[in-house]
Image (cartoon, rainbow, N blue to C red; front, side):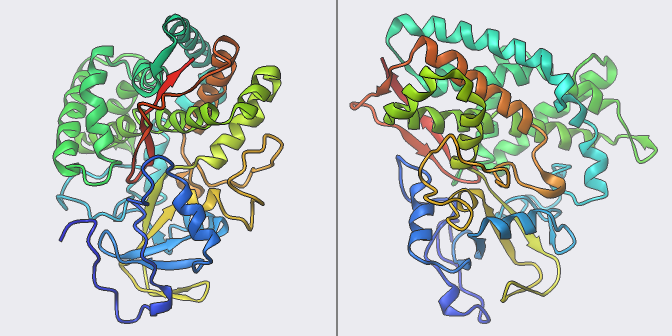
Length: 400
């Protein structure tokens, strides 16, 4: 059986709660979010059972997503942050994402200071200078492949500087990190290579620490003792996965939208003060992660009986497009208030890089649109979507 095959439905799951929807392969190769919106419009249950990827629950209400994100006592992260099983079962855990409080908080503190506002001021200046350099280089050409020529440079180079890794390692690391969030990728094989890379870097920094995130992790004290090697490798590997994919993926969705919606593009170009509000609305509209939790004990969750050990997919695109919270949810409205969005998760696991992501997306809008205000898709070379734990635009040719 492959991950895309249907698994037997548990006998105690009512047929009315079973929906033929694969959250890792939602079905539209050019618009990742439309299948989620169509299910909302089709009146599917607020909580339904998907028979794909081993079988699991999916929540469609933003409020339910927020509740599970915030409740590690009933929904644990220790059994993995996706609906896929941890393979091999004895591999190092990706702490803190594969741990619950209080242990999760101990390891989160190792890198969270690097993402607070004061620490990010220098990163903002660095990102803006890089964005300008990239855009000015691309502008005379009249076209680009946005993902590989911009999105995989701006946020990723900033991240590589934070962890003090050489730029040339980017090409090695990108496919390894992408495999962890991509459907049908050889995750275990690629993760082993990531662990090997992280292990070498951790050992180097433990022996000769510098002023960077990996050095901070490699030399940390946790729970009154030096951090164990496998713990440092797990934390570093998690940083690599998060830092090399998510913001670049979000930028792809935003630029595909702007290429197809000249009215929004021109509105932003005419009024740069809208960039902060636009960033928040784009983060709401293009939520892209499908993380997961495991039910700790048998429980009743809003009228649905869940069994211990069952997986629950937390598909943030459903939360982003929940009409109970966001009227006309597919519409991008820069005046919309969306402070309750679950784009970055919630509870103890809320993404520590959310502030940096906001900064980098805002810079993209503020620096691209004054220089290239009119751009569109290449009709001869349409966008391609990559789905899985993250839904990404992996190929986005733009012309101007």
